Image 1 (spheres, helix red, strand yellow):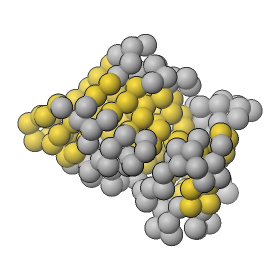
Image 2 (cartoon, rainbow, N blue to C red):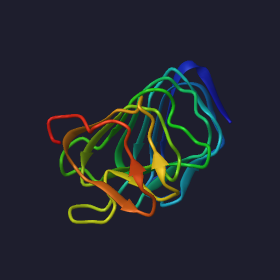
Image 3 (cartoon, rainbow, N blue to C red):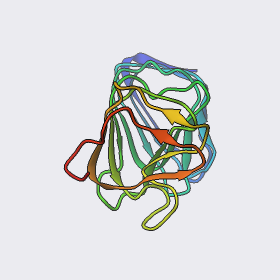
Length: 174
């Protein structure tokens, strides 16, 4: 486990190497950059900071624990995958930054309650089969508290499981 001084930031840049982290306790901002398709955080990320994942279209980071960090989550490239029993902390999740972004959030059969802001094509790219919001696991029904906003033109869908929204999509790009 990585334990920082309260509010200390952690930056991991592994290039094409796999990131495998047990936990990050009492952290400030956590930033992970990896193009590997099998990176993971198996332990709890806690603290008041934000999590940023920057991968490439083929890059995947799995969050495999019930994380308790209270900041936001940003996926600027690659796929952030919610592992079995995993969560993405308490704050809003922003996927991509423009209508041409190739970042994705994969529910992997896990229902989460975070507000979600979507941007772009997703890891499948323009015309691809994996959207900015996707589900590779069992069907997921999102709670009424889960707001999904299309911040820019975005693609939803791909992979295996269905995604059922309790609310209408928000944003000016609906």
